[in-house]
Image (cartoon, rainbow, N blue to C red; front, top):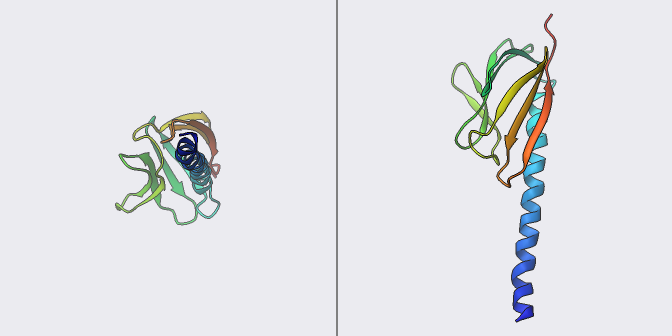
Length: 124
């Protein structure tokens, strides 16, 4: 009976541990993409559920917002790119903490609450 229990518990524990690391890794990749120097985003407008950004590189405006299945970077023309998928829907919030910085918070699928400060390019 003990061996049957061990055979059941060990695979479940390793699966949970891998899932937790993946969620945390996805969170940091999301932050890296938003601060990516290839886009050089400037902060245009902040609401609790959406950031409006402008790319210094191509002059285009983008919206960063959470949806039902993912956190998206969306263009004015309607195209979008999912940036974070392992999060609890509609748990993403933004708060302008400094002139060129925003505090972002969300809850991941594994129940962890994540907070970070994102810095953007300064106005010129």
